[in-house]
Image (cartoon, rainbow, N blue to C red; front, side):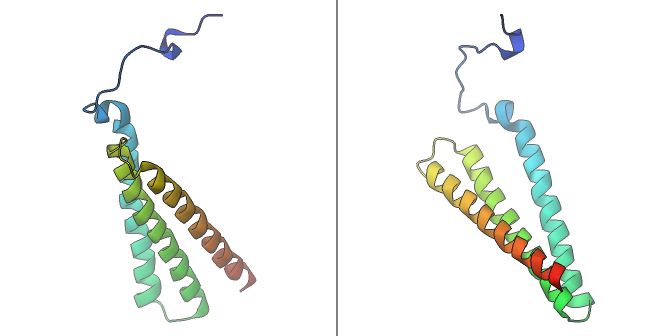
Amino acid sequence: MVAPPLLTPTNETWREGDIMTWHGTELVIAIFLLVAGIFGNSLVLHVYTFRLPSSTVTLIKSTLAFLDLSVIVVTKTLFFYMLLNPSSHLYDAICVFTAFFSIWNTGCADLVLVVIAVD
């Protein structure tokens, strides 16, 4: 069985200047998600902190927005660093840290959602 031409590996080598050739779409989507996430979670934090009266529900929802905002800011900025510096000596450490940070904050957000469900 012969592989289709698009799936056949080539002997081309990747050059350092070809970031946009290889990762252009990935960068555009990541930037869009970063901007949308920061805007949306900041808006939620503003509304639940300054516009609505204080209650348990507003505290819990603002905590959830803060957790999500921290994941977006920390992991996306490190993702950009990893994407633009693939030969960095910190690549493995940053990859492990971002995975840990994302999983840890997702677990915290899950606990907050359980508290919301119980409340």
